[in-house]
Amino acid sequence: MYTELSLDAMHGSLLFVVMAVFLLAGMVKGVVGLGLPTVAVGLLGLFMLPMQAAALLLMPSLVTNVWQLLAGGQLLTLLRRLWPMLVGIVVGTVLGAMSGMSGENVRATLALGIALMCYAALGLATVTCKIPSVHVRMLSWWIGLVTGLISSVTAVFVIPAVPFLQALRLEKDELIQAMGWSFTVSTFAMGAVLLQGGMVGVATGGLSLLAVLPSLLGMFLGQFLRARISVQLFRRCFFLGVLFLGLHLSIQGWR
Image (tube, rainbow, N blue to C red; front, side):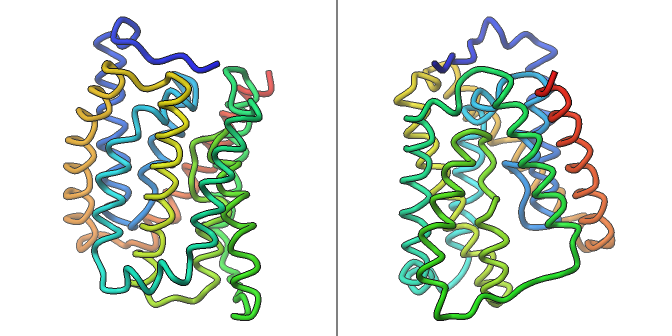
């Protein structure tokens, strides 16, 4: 059973931490083009349950991902190509929520930690693969289903959707827009599940809306930094940080 994060629980210091987390998460997205939900949920998972963090993430994730989705000219072309995966994401998210896997217990924190470590390992790996076009349609549905199941427990939308999209060898702008499709659909699916489960009310909705401001500010700062720092070095440091964060959460959830 989900529990909405109330304003009474959001004391001044925690509110400051939440806004600072979204500022940092937005900055990461501005530099490397992804990572806002992962950073936000991962860091907020130190202070609250993953699903409570996901509820706060809804509006910042929706605004930034729709922005990313619309920033390109392949919107319908990618939809025709990726719709099985997108349908799978919705089905997986709903099935995961119905199964009760995302309940309020240490398993959710442990699962979040493992997901973050897997994400970091894939980000640090230099080996890439390519999926033959004849297998793409068949795999898309299952990739989406597994992504939805994982996100329903951890509120992390990237595994295995992002590695799958990278393996399609899309052009850079197409890849960014394809991830925008995946993240946007994941956000809507997660939002529907959280609304149905009573996790999003007036208080949480207001806090989520407030978190849009530091997220966008962080994105602008990240884009400013992008031209002045080594993006590859930043990515490596980012994924190392995610790896250690995931390890910490896994240990915390295992105890």
